Length: 234
Image 1 (spheres, rainbow, N blue to C red):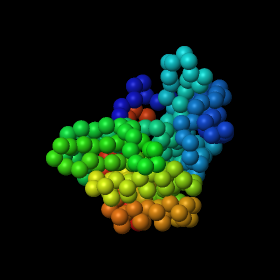
Image 2: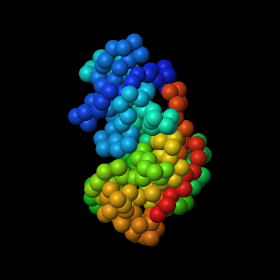
Image 3: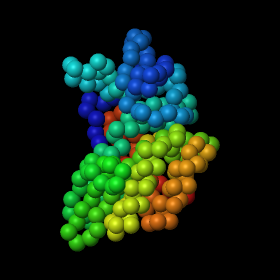
Image 4: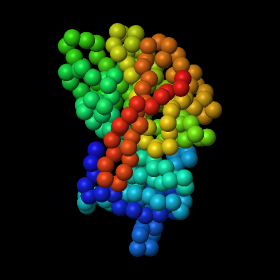
């Protein structure tokens, strides 16, 4: 995924009301930008550190700037825009990076499925094999050298696991794909200390046949793409 023009830079002041972030531009002006992240952003907020943002020319937008990347005091880069995770996953599948998800005739996004009225992030279909349902999750929480998901209690995430298990029971293939948007994360594990129910359900889903994959992103102000498989510790 290439970005043109490249992201611009500033310094983080604070995030508030979930979707708003104040930054200082390189010329010293303080502005409010959009924060495209509904999560807690635990261990992703570092006031005084560098941030990167994109700029929209849509005149209907109240905030033309969107927070894209953050830098940690250790120099790691974090992908803040969780909305990019699905596109990164699709690009990595179609380009052959995610080797486990090759060999399908078609790819569709946001397809209705399951008994709990959900939409699957990616559906792979082929006339000669079972459908493959892929739920994509952005992983950005780093604690003591370990990457974790989720960063807050997620009843929605639990629902998605139940629906993936339902697809397996129906004879389909089901995959939970962690898109790792943090350059300091080298492995992913369920955050049982944050959401014990999710961690328990993930273990049940894996035992039931749901595949769990993780791929790490190479993050920069000019392009971001998934580049390599990342271990998952269940």
